[in-house]
Length: 109
Image 1 (cartoon, rainbow, N blue to C red):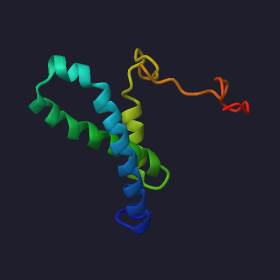
Image 2: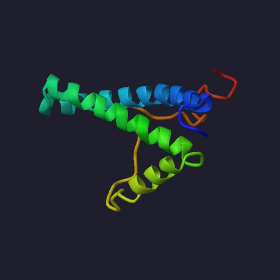
Image 3: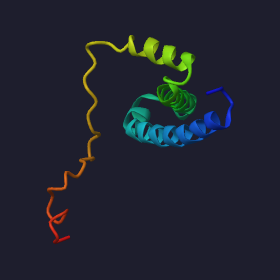
């Protein structure tokens, strides 16, 4: 795939949509931290950094088998993940349905 090709533009458009969604989830999860520690101006500077980093990470991951630069970016970023980081967890207030909840998949709901 060539950068800027129709395939690349389609991947970018789809990835931008996902990145925007992920960025608003991150932004909303940071609301209490924002209120307690960051001014609106600081948050305004932080939002595009987060959004652009998410877009870049998702795009590079999506195109790692197609573009050598993406493959190298993913590799170089992954090697910086600290071993002491906790595994991701669901945000407070979000519990995915397993299908075993009352009314889900039992013909009663």
